[in-house]
Length: 221
Ligand code: BG6
Ligand code: MG
Image 1 (spheres, rainbow, N blue to C red):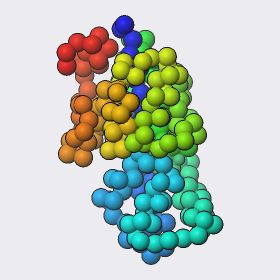
Image 2: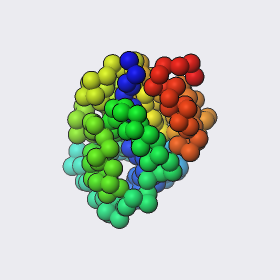
Image 3: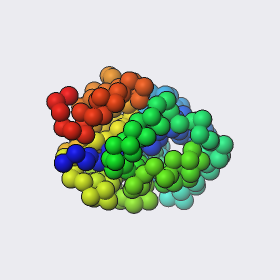
Image 4: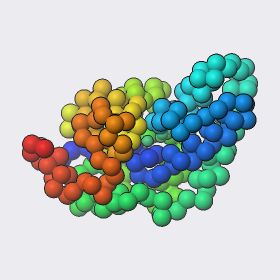
């Protein structure tokens, strides 16, 4: 069948919100006396809000009450939302629109598969909501990446078998989730970090229409 399911992660793939997550987490971490580096942030990419805070506390060997845990989560999100509120179309990453338009032209089903609970807000801000046939995000799943739930649900909504789905991801956890879902994983970002992916590109400017055609028509890549 010449129809594939194209599933896009949001943060770090469609928009560079990874930098805002980093800034918001760093502020929280520093507030509770924890050092937080860019390298650690790499391990938070694709990871849910709750799991991210658990990781930060674990790295710092720090324990907090449930109440404080929730306060920290809310603070982080409030800070993050102030960054989001200023977003506009200029923050769409290079050539994302070219690839989305090409897929629409080729009548390929497109889904969002994101861990974020803020994904719809962000898509609205950058005016991309209408390009997606399905949106599965942190509000629709119970298991965080690297669990494949988010991508399997996206495939189900698109009505496409997982083996006929292609996932674009910038995070280690997301690539692992796509692989576990038995989908083709395409890493967007650093080759070394994303080495578990089936294919890796620095960004969408490196992805040709010829490559997309090969994915659609199952030609050898
Ligand atoms: C992922 C990000 O897309 O969403 C993570 O890569 C983030 O860094 C996660 O923690 C959850 O996002 P949110 O917006 O629900 O806090
Ligand atoms: Mg991401």
